[in-house]
Length: 285
Image (cartoon, one colour):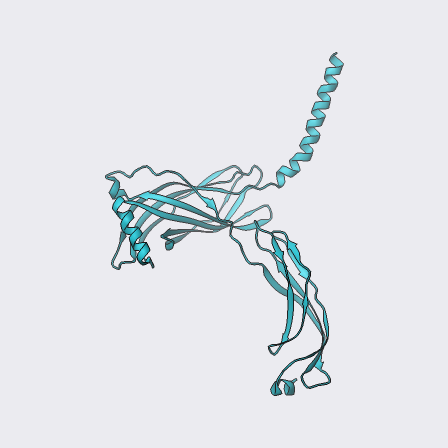
């Protein structure tokens, strides 16, 4: 009986270890998004200044950043805090770069004080007047940064809606601020195209003054800079021009490009084409 129990126990331990060996590498590849929230905000001044659309303000906030990953630290670079009212940015500031260890929580304390000319428009002015009557203003803090973890470098863009009661409207003490969870905006960046190489073995006037004979083979590089999005490429064409005139073109096969990946096309064109160069271009050629 005892030997059977030992065998079952050993089998269970072995199964657990094998499962751990299989699962652990998968777990290690999973990277969780940084969690951002605004823990506190104090609005000491928010008023129209000299001009109808000039804002005078004094705002201080506490921004909490939590790294939920067990194995990966995060580098924060080029960190900016942008402040909006009615969709208009009225101030911004640069925050220090730093490294955040796994499972750690860090805080920024961005504070702004000044005056800004913004274009509120009729709707914006009406919103200000309405919110000024209650002293409760709807603001927005946007945190924009680049983060690095593992071998990945991607943009972090989060939006934090703030419902802040003006200190003067609340009496001698400000009303308690309700902690606000920020939402990830997942910004999209356009793909980046470049020509890495090109070989031109023939490019000359052919039988007619405006007829080109050519042989060209470039290397086209396409990079997807997005960390969150793959890209589908459909109906891809390459057009080749000289003096503003297209002398050849070709169609590429459609494909899907995974996030943060780089693909290359190797188009080759060769032949002869009748184009309208004009007298000066044909003489020069």
